[in-house]
Length: 115
Image (cartoon, rainbow, N blue to C red; front, side, top):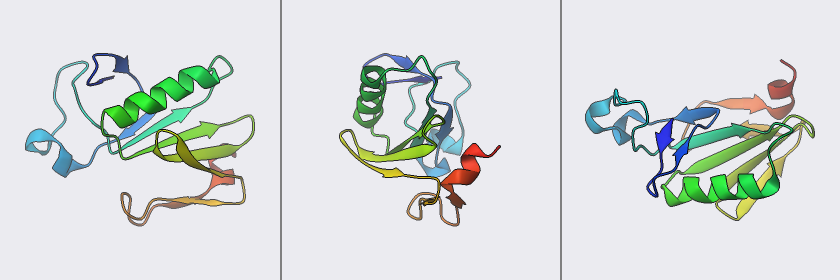
């Protein structure tokens, strides 16, 4: 759980924190610290709405998140946001990578949904 700057608590499905962004290089022990992940990943479920996801993405960027990935199992696509209203959509055949944030990480989008 992450406490946003505006006070809301969010639970991304995956959050990546760079050690150099953490005070003392470690995650705080408190249950919902005010932290900013470098990357927040959300996996859509049937109950998620477009409005809900738009709000989450906006809040992440207000909290200074660098990237947001939204995985959609139904369409087997990934939206890669680098700003609240700007994203590129990747399909099964595309490669998801993040050289500036996760050097060496690279995966075919389709593999994310073949699990």
